[in-house]
Length: 339
Image (cartoon, rainbow, N blue to C red; front, side):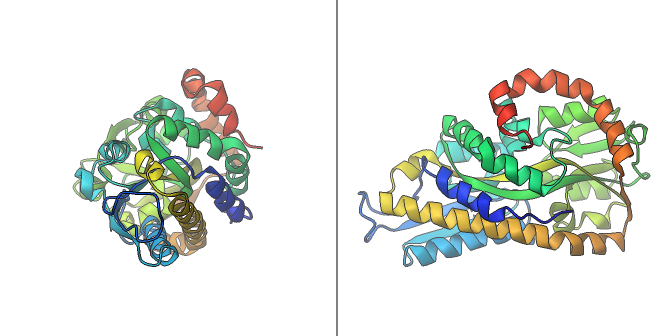
């Protein structure tokens, strides 16, 4: 896996794109930055040991520091505010029931299928391609999509490239997936990817995945290294296939109305803190991958697919690409294409 050379560019794009939805859950009315105080809630989908949580903590620290203590952030892991349901969590963000969240575009795609364009299978070969596409139109396109939902996008963090694990056998070719009961993210696109490959895909809240793997309700699941590792899934899975089949960024979203009710000075503080926190989270996630994989190799059978094996999966998924071209729309699909 390549480390990015463009993380700073991602953070810069986050700064440029952070200007439409605001949030305060406490404080006085008015636009002056002086004396205004805020107590905000932020959720993430996964656990406190993840880089998502570390990024959210950094965001809270930066808000506190840049506002001289006026902005306070409470962080809730595992979608605690929405009963473990990330889709309901996005709706809460849009409705103003919380101020911030880190959520994958996969979750947003359950509301608007255009969001799944950036998570198309085998879209990017590596992080450099993903970074370049995001900096050159991708982030702007997604800021527009979230704005339409009442959410201000404060740039992208990162979950990483998604892999697949299971308890039955190695996955090296499309036939190996047939018949496996796999938990997939709550997205029509992901259900269709795995149905096309002959699996029995199911959706469930991530908070239920470990127990379901442990008791055999499902055979496997797909997620990036950090999510697999930080949630201990290697304890209940024997096989890991490294195929980098989907790149998964994280939208740092803020309720749009809350953002717009901030003073210009406070909007700038939020935007700057978000850009720095996203850069920190992305860097941390990529730096940890090698050590996380090394530890998982001690507990699992790890298979890294080669170019010919990946080509077989791409060919098998051609019907999915054809079906989703119109759902993504030409404008959004083009915005996220490798540059």
